[in-house]
Image (cartoon, one colour):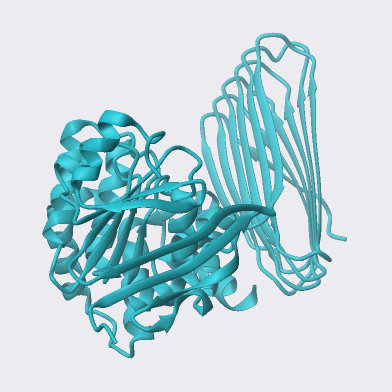
Length: 250
Length: 219
């Protein structure tokens, strides 16, 4: 029994609209590790993150996933969140008419309720929110805005990392968090992620590009191609991909 | 059936009205004089059949009318709204926005007619009717009708019938918001443009909370 294992994926297969996307993925994530998953377009990177978060539109057709020893695939998306999984969306969704404050308070207190904890007092909640917004350099007036409505690409991603900080997950999955960001926004997001790194937690960073990895240094790098992980190595793999492309790998 | 109520908004004045039907059919005929404006918000709560006939005559130049409303029909209600927005003279504006949630075996009917008279140039007339249809047995009929006899006008109408968005729902659930609560937030999000139109005042808070309670416990 390996007590350091947070996530163990074995032979995971999944499809969407009868098209098989994941064709047997194996991946083990231990406490304190940052994994990077790279790969060409259409390899299944976003599918993997969606399946881990429990998106109903995907059908798991084989394999198993254990998170902290529990059967992740049997849990609803909200149960996965309560257990400590967080997915930062590649395309965060706009929710008109719902303010960030209202949204994140509902999320935080739903989790507390599910874990049998009291709801946060208004003062404690506001203090926490202020602290976490500062982490990603969001101005306080942002809390009154409708979730992601009219946000720039950078603002949306900062809002994702802010929510991640508020929910304090054990395993964070960042799906193409770097796409559409300028250098300043990229640095802010990366610093936010790095601040949340602890020996007890882990992250899976899904990315297309090397540039995010200049800021978030991975422990383990995987290449996902055609629904399978075809190569796993240390961070030196990133440079090899940059030099040779994906064709020579796997 | 009640008699038609005729109301004239005098030149340059502003009329605000909140309508909360209690069943039966309401008929209203509003005449707006030059520079007059009217803001009317209709809130139809569950538990009864109701109908409304609305006839608005923009009779004086520069008049403007804003009609907004929501209908909440979770069970077996029939909601029937007929609007005649008559742009009789130049330079008037009208804006209609109706949103509703229909479930169970309820039925919502919206027929919205905009008529722009031949010399009513510089008219601006907009109409939106959006419904969320939450059950297979519920029904929505939406019939926008634009009759434009003048040039140089800006008119648009949009009608949509949809379901709760699954991407939105997954986004919220992935943040730990339970499915049922996510649906409540989605419905409130959908209705918020109409709730924003409720005139500020002593009753606004209690009406907003009545809408929230209805969403939470009736759908």
